Length: 304
Ligand SMILES: [Mn+2]
Image (cartoon, rainbow, N blue to C red; front, side):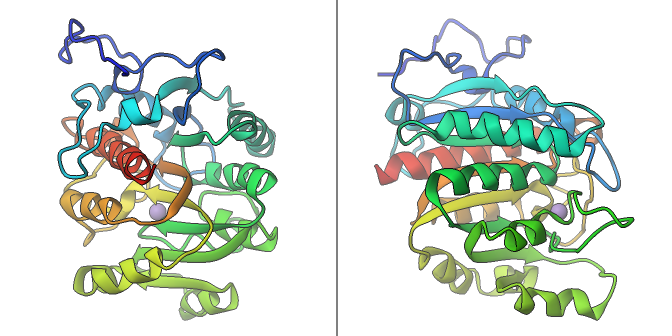
C-alpha cells in the first residue's frame, strides 16, 4: 500500500512533490503520475501560470489518502508518483510544444499510465493531445472553461492559449468534443457559430448551472479514450482569482468537484491549467487546482 510518511507535517513549509507522493522512478509499475508544465508564454492577459505546478504542489500538502465521497484511496490504487516538471523553453512556443509532446508521450508510451498534468497556460493542451493521438488515435475531449478557446488566431499567430482547440480539431486529433462553462463577452456573434462548424458540443455556464444533469449525460455518453482539460477559470473568480483571464459568474469550487466526481468515462489524461499563483489570494486557487487533480485521480482509481 502506498504510504504517505505521516512524520512529514502538512504544515511543513518545504514545497515537495504533489501530495507528498514519491518521485517517479523506472522500477515501479504505476498507473498514474503527476506532471508539471511550467509554461505561460502563450497567455494573452495576465501571466503567471508558469508557477502553476509549484502552486498546485504547494496547495496539495493537505490532501489525505482517503476520498470519502468516492470511497477510494486514489494514490494507493494508482501507485501514483510525481514526475517533476517538463523542461520548457521560455519564449519559444513551438519548440516548447515539441518538448511537451515528447515528454508526455514518453510517460504514456508503455503500459496504461494516466498523466495528471498541472499547467501552464492552456496552449500546453495541444501538444498533450498530439501525444495522446500518437498513443490512442483520436480521443474524446471534455473541456471545462469560461472561454471557447477555438479562435483562429491572435495577432495573426496560430499558437496561443485561445486557439489550441481549433488547432487540435484541424489536426484531426479529436473525436467527440464537449465543452462547458462558457461565458463572458465575445468578439463577435460568429464566435458562437463556429462551434457547430468545428463539431463541438458547447454548453454555457447557464446550461451547467440550470441543467448540470443534462450536460453530465452528454459527457458520460462518450465512448472510448477521453481526455479531460480543465481551465481553472471555469470556476468563479471569487473561488479562483489566481488565473490569467478571469470571467465573473462561474461555478463554485463545490460544483466543479461534484461534476468531476460524477464522471463515468474512460479517462486517459487530465489537466488543470491557467492557475496563476501571483494573482492568487490565500492559496485558494492553488488548493482548488490540487483538489481537482485529486478528484480526477479518485475517479480513475474508482473505475479500476
Ligand atoms: Mn479560459
